[in-house]
Image (cartoon, rainbow, N blue to C red; front, top):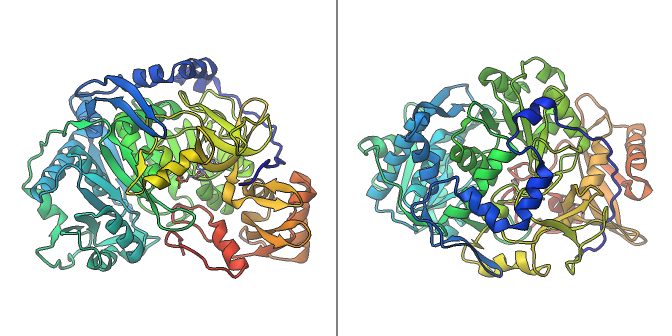
Length: 629
Ligand code: WT7
């Protein structure tokens, strides 16, 4: 493992919360709230848990059998009871839960009462097919409300859902169905992507042909005339639900009962089935949504993720519904039919909380600031970013585009962590490019490979020192792989990210440990070099890799996408190198720069540097099932 990561990036800008933000915030004083939570984490988490409803209480908050955790031991609960019944019992029954907008601008508005009824019908329909507690269902749907209904319906009766993003190919879907041994697959005839029709049913047909555990396939038919189904295995979604009763009591489940499996790509080998459970996951997603986004009753909350990824699970579906929020969710891409798409939706629905990704921000940056300027974005209160380090340039652009005075929550977490762990709260002063501080109840540090805490500004491994409620409980059917997260560095959870803390304790994520580049005795994180590259006015996106070099160990090669209208020239390449020299110093200047039309990305938008590297070195590309194109 790499040691002693060098930190080169110096960012000195500081943004303090506005008086308005301060006045509204749930947590006024982060420092004292944090200290208190860390002095007694179990007390903190149990107080949070008491804000939710449980069928029977816990006898113990945490049982920690390193590296196995159980939270809220002995309690029974059901996450959907807290997402639905808790609101449908009150005035919120007629509050809007979901506003859905299709790629073609079709709109559907679903209240908490209606969502409750739809989920119950679907839960009853699942029961009618013979599904019982502990069975697995694979959900391969585009971003439509039925995707959310299906997830909640499974959870309602203790069935474990495995949502597979609808961009995955048949072999990738098949391997996930097979690993989960799913009995049922829920899909749609088609999805839409920038006007293109994606034939999802065809993908499922291929995947199911090789998946003997699947006994039924439910198909949501969006097109007219509806495509034929081959009975009796295939059932139409609407026929499936139409005679079902709108009441289905939530199953009283042990707090540790699995809620879902979500497959995340490992760097090599087969995808890992991350397992989350009802109780702890409910507590973690509930409180992070409430505090990080400072959620209030009248907010309109817009998270651009797809429920096919963990961000959608935690911050479109579970976290916001647990809080009784109004959620806007939209099918489609940020630049279709034009780059004003999301700004337009924000204006149209009066969005107050907007949660997106650095990759999408950089895409929108390419089209310039005139697009956001066309719309009234004054309803925005809080912004969010997730998925990758956000480079200060993109941070500043996003901040300006959204009005110039709305705080950006740069939230660091992982599929495995279940909920946000390192993040500002709206009242925390912000430094562009830093995910700032640990969330309440979370002890985080930057350490060397022996687990020793590193001094300020020394780069090392980001670790979490104690278990937390929403942590994954295992990797499905692969406990050994789970253990590596807690074994790599003694006595803590290793995220696989490199990071440094500055003198104020702010955390700066610098990329994945696997991607570290070693140049002449220095070890550099990819994020800093890429951030310096995109700070050049002609550069839209950048990825860097290390290439073996006889003299210096590795040399840096950069792949760059230019902004619209920019033309490649030796002078431009030189000026980009000068920019890196100026920002970070000589050591970080790439020896080669290739201008490319696109970069290999995962379907969730992360740059796949290992693919660039393998290609550059003429090696085998490894598992590329998650690659976008
Ligand atoms: C990895 C986890 C968490 C939901 C989406 C991705 C990177 C995520 C940040 C951030 C720097 C970040 C890390 C992490 N990452 N958020 N705010 N700053 N890096 O989930 O696919 O499980 O990926 O994404 O490298 O380990 P995921």
